[in-house]
Structures are given as structure tokens and as C-alpha cells.
Length: 102
Length: 145
Image (tube, rainbow over all chains, first blue to last red; front, top):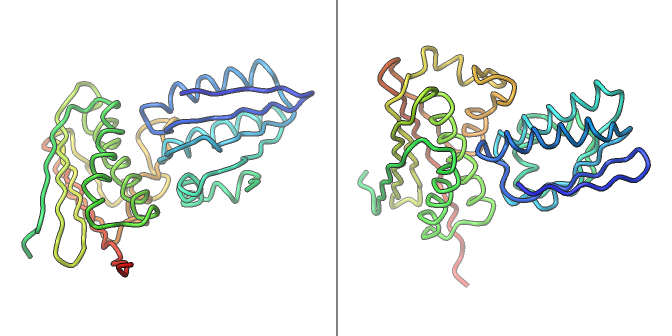
């Protein structure tokens, strides 16, 4: 699961691409957690523009990362969510919890 | 009602097969000329059902998962996902949103997504014998150009 990170001041931008299913989710969750804990950002921008498929495994990835950012006293924004992933995340009400930038 | 076309695949409950199963279902459904949204809904629902087999039906070992796809004359696609795993003791409870026995890397939204992305969802399970999930989705007929 390829992820790319960019740090600008206290903002960490993580771009995820590929298919986020159960097969890929655990490695993605671990890597996201490590990047966040290493950078300790004030804000995390999670860019899903390159995600070609997401199922409910992605809901857990997003919510766990959001919880970690809350524990760190920071915020998190979802960016460039493709329509298919948006439908899945919205089915779980993720858009009501996490800041969402279309 | 007799199906006009049918395909059946059996594969091991390895997580690498999640992508295989949903792509195979999407390819089979392509003959109904679905929209991209319809194809995505089918892929998502199949992914959820197959993931359940891999995570819950066979928690300790590998087992076989069967995916059966059938097409009916009224443009309905029927998707059946069957395992011979541990079964679900309380199906009603398992279908509730956010309910999971899978730990904090699972969202508990699998059945909710299958239910909302498909027209019909039926879950039959016998503890110790296995689970069969049957989903139906009618594909819209588009006007020929």
C-alpha cells in the first residue's frame, strides 16, 4: 500500500493510493500510526485522491487515525475523497465526525 | 425463476482473494451494462461478504469460500457467498451497525454496507457449519444509444 508523506511546519499530509480493503488495511494502519507518532503533527491532512477502492476496512483505518490525532490534541482533515470511498465512509457517518474537504 | 447465466468460484480464505472475488463479480456483472456506481456497489458488497469469511468464518485456519453469481431475466444480479466456517450464533446482532467481534481494526459496518448497497440481503448461518449470504441487486436498464 503506497503512502506518501509531506511535512510543512506542524501539518502532515499523507497521501494514500491503491485499494484499501482488509488485505491492505493492517499494514496501512501501522504505517499511518508510525508516521503520525514520528511527526506529532498539529494537523493531519489525509489525502485519499489515489484510492481506487475502499470497503469498511477503510472506515476503521480513518477512525483509528482520527482518534490518534484527537489523543495528540491535533486535528484531521480528509481530502480528495473519491466517490466510491465517500459512499462507504458516509454509510458509517464518518463525514459527521471528521472534517471533510471535497 | 431460472437464471439466464451463472458462474461459480471457489477459493481459499486468503485475504489476497478479496480483490480477486470483487473483481470477478464486477466482470460477471459487466454483461448487464451497469453504471460505474452500480459496479462499485457490487464490488463493495462482495468485498464485505468475502472479508467476513476470511476474518470471522475461519479465524484460525484457511477454509474454502464459494462465490456464486447468477443473472436473471429481469436484470437482477444475485450474489451468494458461502463458507463452511464457525457460523454466527446471533445473526440479528451481527447485522447491527458497529457490532463486531473482530477487534479495533474492524469497523462493524460490513453487513450495514451490504444491506444499504444491495436491494436485498439474506443471511443464513448454522454455528459450527457455516454461513451463506445472499444478496440481490437489480441493475437499471439503460436506453440504447
